[in-house]
Image (cartoon, rainbow, N blue to C red; front, top):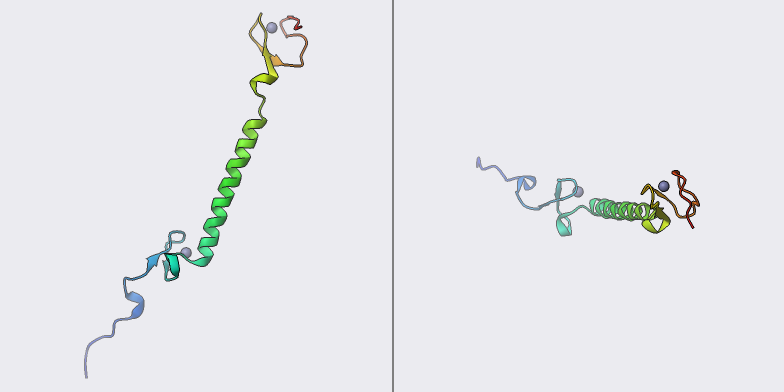
Length: 90
Ligand SMILES: [Zn+2]
Ligand SMILES: [Zn+2]
């Protein structure tokens, strides 16, 4: 009778760790297929968020939509005909 214990396969320090969930992943690439999908979704959501942020920034009134009053230096919308200070634009 031998006392030698069989080494359980699960304790072998092999295999990669999934970068998404931190669990061991034995699949190709070292990432769970469902985690890869989640990661891709997160990247897409980030890109979407960034694009939306850029859109909002572009929607903000830019300098060509405002004009500066020569009297009080206050900015008014380009379509305003008179400034608050009483200055009349041409
Ligand atoms: Zn995973
Ligand atoms: Zn003014």
